[in-house]
Length: 165
Image 1 (cartoon, rainbow, N blue to C red):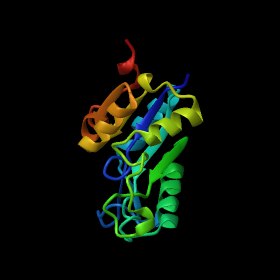
Image 2: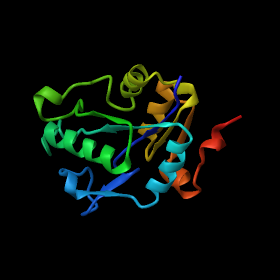
Image 3: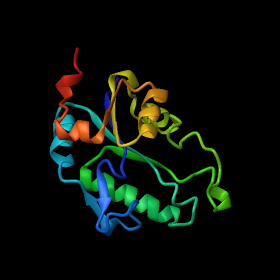
């Protein structure tokens, strides 16, 4: 089975020109400079790079699902990821169609389980990088073997061989 490095997007691997999150348009995305060289190490080590991102702004009407999809796809291209999954739902949203509890909204593990099925992943041998307790809870709920906070992961940086026994 394959191993993956799961990546939260907003605040972890990307920001925007204005610094406000999340980006509403692909051309506003700024990839954080410490990210690409570290991801290259993980890609070369055979890890699949998979984004997992809550896009609750859709549920509040800040932007539409088309914009969330476009910024997600742009981030995949900019970082040469294998795939990304996004969740437009938020239980307290103001857009009725998206104002629900959904199994794909982190910290629920739905996006990881979908990725595991799509890519044949061994979640226990995979890792996750995020910037919040919600991301850490997602990794734990999904059974992802290791979790790193953004600054810890990209600051040192953590190398793939650090996960080997």
